[in-house]
Length: 102
Image (cartoon, rainbow, N blue to C red):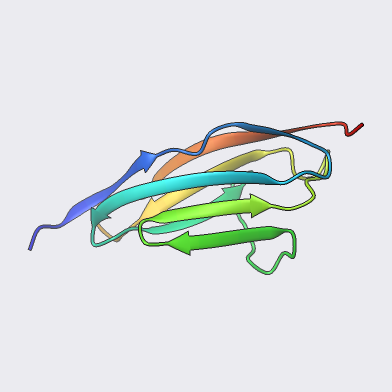
């Protein structure tokens, strides 16, 4: 059985949303065994307990959805981290920008 380290094949893209809007980041990885994906905001793990942050895990893919994005609070650098115990974890990052609502 072959074993190979994680590789991020779909990186999250920078997102800009209006204050109060919904932002979503997508990340896809491959490796053997299948990598576990997690999200960090400014270097700290995103808590799945936060009511406005929703992490939607799927096989080898993960979506981070932020409801009612708040300026000054949610505008940050978000990182998708893929790890499977083979080699080092790999990280891809994207930035969320929030502009004032009308």
